[in-house]
Image 1 (cartoon, rainbow, N blue to C red):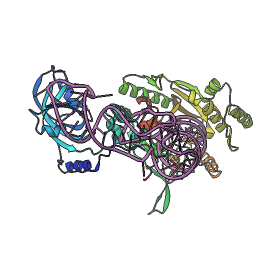
Image 2 (image 1 turned 45 degrees about the horizontal axis):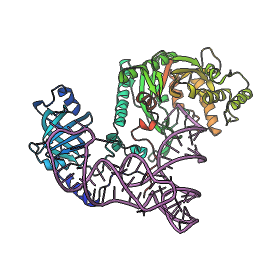
Image 3 (image 1 turned 30 degrees about the vertical axis):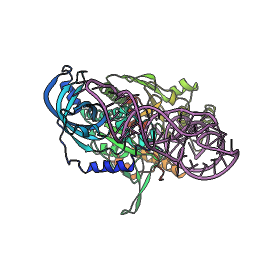
Length: 488
RNA sequence: GCGCCUCUAGCUCAAUGGCAGAGCAACGGACUCUUAAUCCGCAGGUUCAGGGUUCGAAUCCCUGGGGGCGCACCA
């Protein structure tokens, strides 16, 4: 178990005393980045005559007798501080600032003889005393336990981590802007659900005391969003935190973020186009290119992405032609031959075919591909395929072997939806913890009329992983779910 | 839930059965243009916890805990 610097007691007391001198507010007039923007072009040894005030954390210090240099880092970047006994108030104090302390500095903008843009410290104020250190100044903090449990330390110690979370923020911001530009309206729907629905997943349960009832944390916002389409929001989206009571891995966190959107009058073909355009747009805007590297391999996100049916892809990768009309025993035999170990008696052809696909094909799909036309049996909210029997108009976008998006032409027929719900409820009664229940509120909404609608869900964390080039979902979630530290 | 790996100073890491160490940070000092500054000095440890084997355990074994990766589940 990693713990960071605990200075000896006498020192902690001295540091604690420093806190009593901390001012209540401070007013910097520049960020370090704006200083560079404004003054980077001046000559070495130049003096500008411009006095500025900046603030941040002192991350490095280099003393040189009656001179001292420091690196002041703020959220925008860093700038060198240049202090000297001849011009800096309380120079001795300046040389004793602990690395990690927050300080505010006022002084002239200069460039040193060596050409480093600097603030020539006239006065300085301690804004926080760091009683714990920020790790090795060269190697940072690499202990992943510390990085995830004490993210505040990771963010200061590791520039790459800071960049990833800035990229995440810009991704969501760009996504929101792009959708709003296309007439999509952002909404917020409940996270407490009386009936868990919208995805096949085990929900978390909680309890409301005043209502005296159990509630479920949402596994998807889907049903509420489609009710809003019924209500006249023709283009609607939510960036939704959802909760699934399932395993943790480098690709799964129990709470994660999904973009879900619904577009009236559209079908799943429109959703494909929207998906590839949105992802390519984000890559261009944030990375400047759609040709990226992921896990050491090239990956091109430029549209159009390949479109292929699920059964064609299975044939391509497993060398076997499956068909939903084949006898289920034959499909089970094929599944076993391809390494599907647990095959439940209750599975119909659709579920068995999906298992074959997931076992043999999904992880091998690298470049973006729309895997189209899923079995109806495993897609209780998607509309029947207009041509292919027993399948629905649904696709998953697979990128780098992972599901990035899931979309359908939405099922709009309330009678058919009820039949699908009842089948789900039967499966649930038979022990399938991921099956859905009958949602009467949703069925009543459908009775009011859902027009043809395309719906799309994108895993935001996984999208950020792709754009940031990181391979663990914990590197894109600020505070990932962890076991609590053992109390000592 | 299962398997493999891992846990040593605040951080990053050595020491693999034989005296627990280094660099950085911290602390004291030298140095008027440094860039991970440099140099000198000082201090810092229940080697994750508990048990066992052994003349001797950071090292080998067992149990427990944290973490990582993989499998399973899933997005």
